[in-house]
Image 1 (cartoon, rainbow, N blue to C red):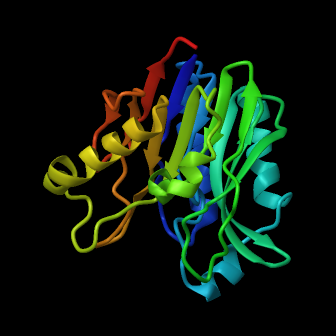
Image 2 (cartoon, rainbow, N blue to C red):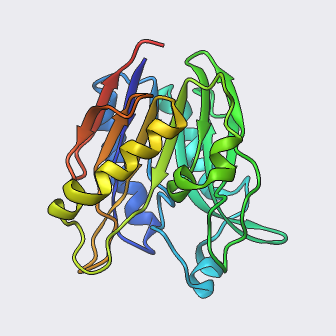
Length: 240
């Protein structure tokens, strides 16, 4: 299996520009013929937390953005995981979807460790694919005990889309190496499953998502990495 993680360079609140950039990055990734592509949390909008922004940018499922992403999965013939701000009848969710190469929604995960004005999801489901059993946890869900304990014991690959930044200066390579990276490796070790983590890279003067991606073994070993503070593609070939 060829896994591709894209730490998308994102301009918050500008989904049209971000979609153009994503299409360019998918074209670059297609040279490597990936089987599965994973994108960051809130892929096309950046992570939003003010209710006015949620009301402006949230979309239903199905909806315009979901259809566009389904067409990309179909066009490139890949499994595709992406995140969006979901508008539901009861409120807003931070949601991630996994599409099949035929453009069908296989899995929907609503983030379980969110803060208001978001609502929290309550399920960490798994789906059987021809690449193995796959589940999604979004960002802080990796550290959320209720989410982790719901994971299927037979799970083979965990996808973790993120939009994580540091307070103040971000990216911060020293802080990443001295503090944050080890915390993620330890969290994956507790989960005990091969895990792919991909973060957005935001164009913000401070506190922006800090980019990078990594693949981590079930015992917490770093198998591959796209450097902190970059939007470098991470390709990883994995035997299912």
